[in-house]
Image 1 (cartoon, rainbow, N blue to C red):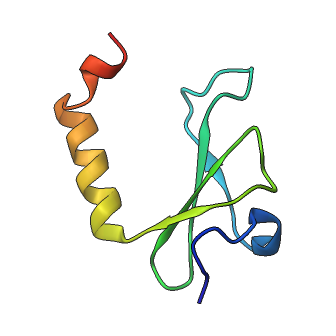
Image 2 (cartoon, helix red, strand yellow; image 1 turned 180 degrees about the horizontal axis):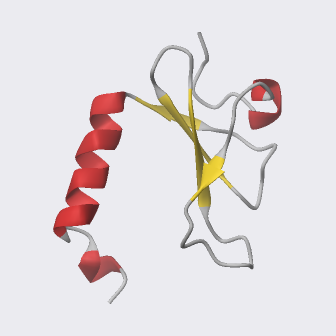
Length: 76
């Protein structure tokens, strides 16, 4: 089991993924699925920095809201 705030460098066995929409300057987040089914998120500019771990339900709610446009006002 992983702890919130654990450095990403201690999770070397994970496969991190960025969005295809990420830009070349590295201003994006990366996500990886943990063996427990939870989702780890890290800042791509700091790959050895801390990660935040979310439940699958939390990620599903966020992705669903993003698809529905709930956060569009933040990038307008």
